[in-house]
Amino acid sequence: MNKAELVAKIADDTELTKTQANAALDALTDTITKTLKGGGKVTLVGFGTFTVKKRAARTGRNPQTGAAIKIKAKKVAKFKAGKELAGRI
Image (cartoon, rainbow, N blue to C red):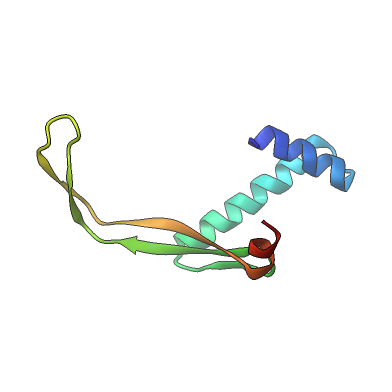
């Protein structure tokens, strides 16, 4: 499912217009992004938790040449499904 399909489904389920559903989805993703960027976490009870994880620097391999390369440390977004979501899948 892509964003347009998700917006259409939200609009159908909530009796909002597609424009309103798109604005709501954008607000949700922006809020989650800003919270994670600030070092916080977002927990949606029954759905899951979004957190930031620090990935350590490591050595990798260039698949074309086989040469060793250094991969810098970085922060990555992590999602852990909640118990209710995991049970429904």
